[in-house]
Length: 273
Image (cartoon, rainbow, N blue to C red):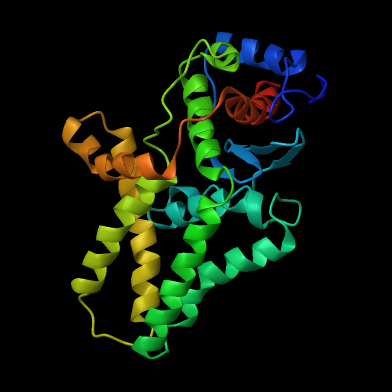
């Protein structure tokens, strides 16, 4: 999406093509559900079909989300795992936003717990703590937390049809989101703990792996159910994650919000056709 000359803290100025898309989206009768992730160098925004990465340096990268078989998308538990894997697509695909070294690091972090199934408990604990610490440092690097808040704000602006106002700073939707991965992580911890504590079958070498995969699938089903419910008791399940977002997000600057809005405009431009 061309437009504008460099300027401001991150090189963002008034960009007519972006604003035209935001105007059109504000007037649209319906918009696709958006998600995203923040990085130290920009923001990824995704819909079911497309993704876009807007960098703080003014770059923009675009791609298509992987399509899962329609039959599997209706299978409980399996559909949740498919959604989780698809959410990582903008990072792990060869044309994604993560560099090769970073993809290797993230793959190691994801697969390390699986490889520790047969390791002694002390080794597993040490490696687990090391991997967790490395992931935390990766998540906290640069201005990731501020761009995380910008990602939430841009998505909320789309949901409330305040995209253009958010671009100009006259609207500042919440930086907290009920659909943030932080909420998922807050739900996963008790589900995984209960799964390990009350596993009904005899313990075997592969039990930790099975419990981990099932915990991810069950948590995804619970997360989707809670988001779809309007009952106050159901929404209470999101409170720990929303509280944790006070740590994982920071109030973004206007130029950081515009980074996220540019990625939103890229996705919506293709969705609106």
